[in-house]
Image 1 (tube, one colour):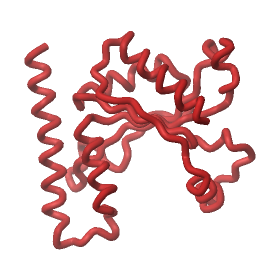
Image 2 (cartoon, rainbow, N blue to C red):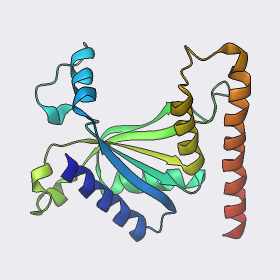
Image 3 (cartoon, rainbow, N blue to C red):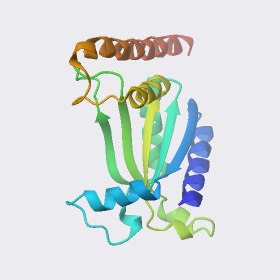
Length: 185
């Protein structure tokens, strides 16, 4: 799985260069043994036969400089990888004003068949990975949420408005940065 993660990072970086995408960072992780065990034992609706059926053992995050670059990354991922699960937004969409800051695109992919015929990829046949795509500021907000232990169900209501305002500021920054980039290009 470490090798698979590393190959996917190389492929995504190559894709970004070939298609001239504005990528800030690409990184990945392999689920820890304890996290994987929790996932396969706690989800009563899914019964896994083999570990390759778990779609997020390997996770890749692509962080763009600009929010409006996310759609271009999604477009090229759809061409350069086999999509196992359609793209979805995590928790938030641009059209849900009550939730701000963390609108992340995600999908599950596999290496495409034409690439699996190559020696350096054939051992990854059937393996999946979850890919997340977000802007720099969406990424920053997600890290802040993790750091403060944000959860809609548990977050103190008396500070929720202030916290949401901070998220809005990052969304506004994303939006204004898009305008600057569009003007310059």
